[in-house]
Length: 311
Ligand code: CP
Ligand code: NVA
Image 1 (cartoon, rainbow, N blue to C red):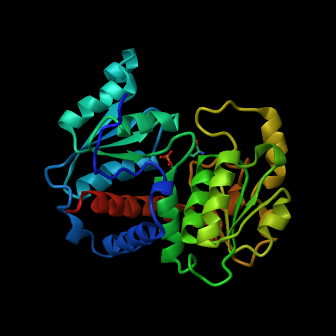
Image 2 (tube, rainbow, N blue to C red; image 1 turned 90 degrees about the horizontal axis):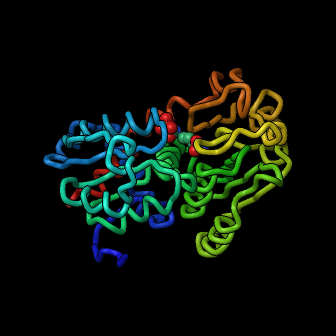
């Protein structure tokens, strides 16, 4: 199928966005958070659909509320109840979206599914999570760090510990795009994918950041300003007792957190599996900023929509 020729802008991965665009978006998120009323008509007469093949609480609600707050109309679709559930292809469905909608926000399994949708329509397509990436989450997390005056702080140490998944992939891309160092503590069996590593290596040459991938979680977390983790079993992955056993040393608990700076911030995209990747003691501690992260999804996504739909 020939790719439709178009000038439209999608948000499929942070790879497609420049440092300037990412900085613009996080600054815009702050402006929107401070003056929501000013942006209440950006999506007037726009119909934007959410198509979710996987469960969601935060992404779905924040997009639905955000689209409404920007003056647009939001349709929530479920692929099982569309003809997709009976085998209509992503490509054909995308051509139908193109006829009725101004945009579609998709959560699905393969990144290729969302790329197929994007290449078969002229409307904006936004990635609301795939097995490979979660750019909306990371845009929002960058905004949270920016808002707390941490993102561009000198000698800022940000450490991700745990499973290598869509969150880590997008964190690696986002931090590298911004030229900010990132440290990863991961088990040798669950390290970032080769394709991501080679992308990061080539981007880092121009962006100038350091990406440190360590197997020792204590060393990875040592003197960190922020520790971030995510679930050990992502949606669509099979639960493995061996993996959970292997990842035990990467749990954020009192002992691991004590290696970081005093009062280091704790981040998690949520939902959390309490007592697996993080203990309740840490998740509910005053240093945890997970609820701020969740709230900021709304403003980061409103910034993204404002950017995509402003003339
Ligand atoms: N963090 C996040 O994307 O949460 P949901 O799966 O609830 O949307
Ligand atoms: N890595 C997790 C993120 C959930 C927001 C998953 O894909 O299930």
